[in-house]
Image (cartoon, rainbow, N blue to C red; front, side, top):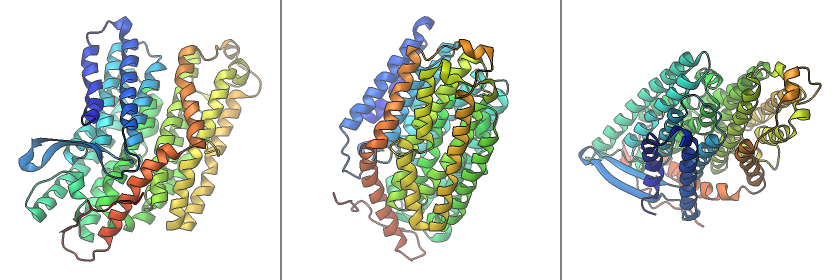
Length: 508
């Protein structure tokens, strides 16, 4: 088990190279088998994971440039565990449902490269390695949108790249400076996140470093007002690009806040709680209203993603166990639900070559299976109790209620807007008379599409009823992180110090 994380990272990487040798007629099956094996490896990792252990597990440390403290360090805890599993699962599902025919081999190979970078982000414990995987993930997604997207694909892909790349450059400056601060304090270079967690930084330095990291993470989430690249990216990306973008890539930003910003800069995180909460509330309200006004089904879901990510941000900056654990659960929930919704839009687009809501109506009559599955996933999106969406939203808002009851109540009320625009879209698309002749001849879901969608519906119901498998390991890891934050906040000295956080544990 010592090397299982490296296997998870590099198996799709080597499989992608082998894919160049695979016959074009067999490449789809090859991609599905590869991602299935990757998913099975992640399940083996989960089986061997100790859910009650708050520390990093499956650690591996290989020196790269030891004189500057740059090492290949990977590990996983309850915060990143299910993000890795969700990555392998959603990549597999997206390939099962894949309907693209243009340059199929290139697309599948690109997706396998992308899978490597996404898993690398979630398991990297060296800031330089984390940054490399973070930046490398831009390239395959840029290619997916630019090569297989819609009419405005070049504009959308370049806008996506520029926003995320320049935000990441500012974050890189912060990372390099923090490595220098560690060197000035200890006499040794280190970019190990666990070493950085032992630093107690003065408040002013925390503020500047928090802003530097915020630039990278906020654009990736994306938070208001950095969200404008996302609707273009989703609108122009092929279905598989939208699924992976919504399910996994956006979570890299929220994960970065949890892994870096909170434990490294606890005082700055506390200082910026209200401004960030206001930005999150604006995102929830504003993008919900924009989603309601959309005529394109895919754009409704794209703007809903920004709105739901705002709730995740509220949970993270609750700065307590309930809120942060809820935000982690909501990351998983949003990944499954939004990925499923984009798959469903891809299904109807494949049949009608349009995503305009006005072009549909009465779909439940001709596509009952499609309408039923859409209803289940939509209920998960609006947070219906006993679905996966409810647990994360409830815990995130509960956690933030302890920080600011007024803002939490406002956020809870505005989440109702999500139910409004989703149910209105569903009503217009699936009920009423069939006004378009083309819709009368639509074929319901086939076996391939059912194979991809039924597992998503199963997870939406299962984790809505029984969230313990995700929440238990997350709670232990988050509890330790919150204790580290509190231990560092208690120090009022303005000098940089080192504190022993390795001894902080969580009682079982």
